[in-house]
Amino acid sequence: MDEQQQHSETSRPTAPASPTPPSGAPDRPSHKHDKRDTPPGVVRSHRGRNIALIVAALAILGFVLWRWHPWGSPGGTAPGASGAHSGRPGRGGLGGMANMPQPVHVATATQGEMPVVLTALGTVTPLASVTVLPQLSGTLQDVYFKEGQMVKKGDLLAQIDPRPYQISLDNAQGTLARDEALLQTARLDLKRYQTLLSQDSIASQQVDTQASLVRQYEGTVKSDKANVDTYKLDLVYARITAPVSGRVGLRQVDPGNYVTPSLTNGIVVITQLQPISVIFTTSEDNLQQILEQTQTGAKLSVTAYDRSNTTSLEGGALETLDNQIDTTTGTVKLRAIFQNGKNLLFPNQFVNTRLLVNTIKDAVIVPTSAVLNGSMGQFVYVVKSDNTVTVQPVKVGPVDGERTSIKSGLQVGERVVIDGSDRLKEGAKITIPADKPRGASGARGASGANSAAAASGASGARVHHGKHAAQASQ
Image 1: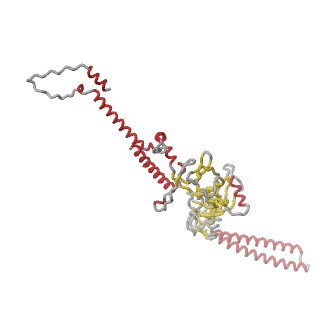
Image 2: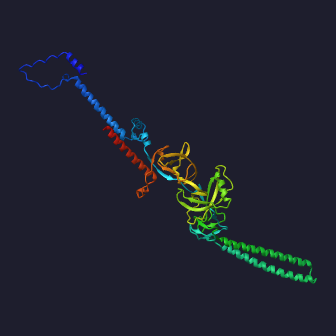
Image 3: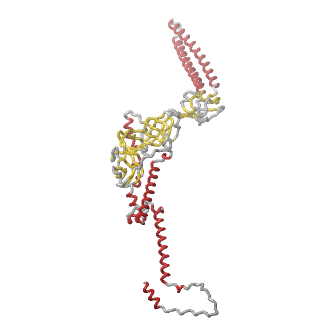
């Protein structure tokens, strides 16, 4: 290349020399640099050097972005591919993450009792809800209850003006006394006539007529006594008492109003609260196992929870089942009885019910978070002795909140992964972080601890890779 440049320079004609300025003219400094005075090889050398510097800067910038930009996350494809080709675990490379032990939390399958519980939404229904109506007409004099008060059966609630019924009672009692006197006289006459008839001193027809008169007075007296009892009962009805024990609602009629038995809303409504029932439904598929227990005389336990299904309100027992299945929903109604000693169950309140149907003895129990769903069905990650995991299909039994029973596929004492399984596959290596004491900051869940361990592991992997890269460049 240098020889060609020299050959071209020698073959190029020599430029004519610039004329010499006259002796009298002053020398003028040259302010412009003639590009023709610079050799072309020097110009191209400077240009190539600049391009090389730009390319190097871009390469360094790209490497920095590739190392520290979130593109290098575990889900990235391009960084993982370059890391796989280079034979080094690049940041976020699938091959590098797969070879790294994954921090997980594990639990041991235990053996114990697993309750078979049926959950359903129920409605609190009082055993008695009575609208208190007056049974006779009159002016409402007084009301002796307070709204929301707890009353017992027979307590006085209100009083209707009893004076008209007292007057009627007095009149009926007077009529009764008169008719009783007439009956007594007729009986004496009949006895006298019967004596004269035995002496053949009177006709038998007169004796028969007197006997009929006695029976007539007896009927009258009996009717008078019924009238007396009727007016006495009216006086009882004038005192309105509680027909059942329970809680009274809002007063519907104020004192001073004229009330009648046809009153629409009544005077007040009394709702029985102790005991109280909850009506809930269950699928007809569960009917058989419920009947198997109830037909033997067993009392099935029922627990009522609040709407959030977290707080237990009251415990009771299953009382009865409905006599038919609802064909539109395929469910059957059940009634459970609760003593409701603390009045935590309120009429028409929605509650969550848990019916304990049976208890499985010696069941294999694992945390519910250990059971996963996949294309093969339900499975768990079982931890082997060499700190690797294997996929184990299982058949799940009854579930009780955070506990799940395993029918088959798992043995007591085997360890299963309960947190961090989203980064695992068949044969993956794992690490089990040591349990740290739970203080104020230790109140976080297992998922928070696992996330912190995963973040620290990823940060350590980046530092380790950076050290290897620095050593390789040196």
